Image (cartoon, rainbow, N blue to C red; front, side, top):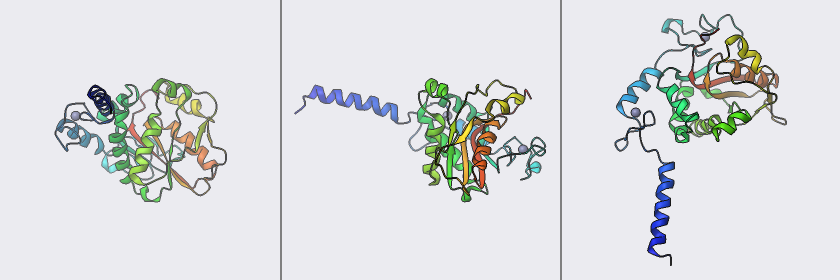
Amino acid sequence: MPSPSTYSRILQRLQTLLDLVLPRGCPGCDQPLGEDAPWCETCTTALLAATSTPYCPRCGAAAEPHLLDPAGCRLCRRESSALDGLARVGPYPTLIGAMVRRYKYQRQQRLDRPLGLLLAHAIAGRSWAGSIDALVPIPASLRERLSYRFSPVALLASTVGKQLSLPVLPLIVVRGKRRQQVGLPASQRAANVRGIFHVARHARVRGARLCLVDDVATSNATLHAAARALKRAGAAQVYGAVLAKAAMHNA
Ligand SMILES: [Zn+2]
Ligand SMILES: [Zn+2]
């Protein structure tokens, strides 16, 4: 029989573990929450505002309602696109972007669930949602894996997959070096990722309808490069889904 002090030590450890695992407050701001409330009132309002802003179904850029056209907005209409459509939760300069930063850079892994639910909801709202066969996470570079100590995008994709009952297939692999896209002007972003994504050996993607998952898209260069690799391997359709879409200012 363990002594009472051993029991209390075990309980203490269990509590520490639960504190790490269970959400302790609002996912948007860490404020304590009432029972059953998934978000606080302020964050609920901010989320509704961010997720209800209209966006271009082709590139994800913020668009006026009358500009919503499957052929694209004024920013992307003349550009070729390897993506057949893009779903996004919200624009980057909103609560969504702030949550992505906490999730990745402050390593708040528990945000995978609320962010995953939001992304699943964004995908489910697209006309193509029902046609997808699988989700494909954009792989992290070795440097990112070392600095985050977890794979934010892979974890996110697995939550979305559970929500939408879709398999998550790591079909894309990285070969070659790339610099971080953050901070690069638009003109260099496409070149930075050109040719670095490949379809994993033995992966069968011919005829598949896939949805790439990433955390943030700015120029969409990463998504386009990965979509191109999948299409070269025979994928029938490739869509993209991101938490936040940032505007490209330094074009
Ligand atoms: Zn909140
Ligand atoms: Zn567009």
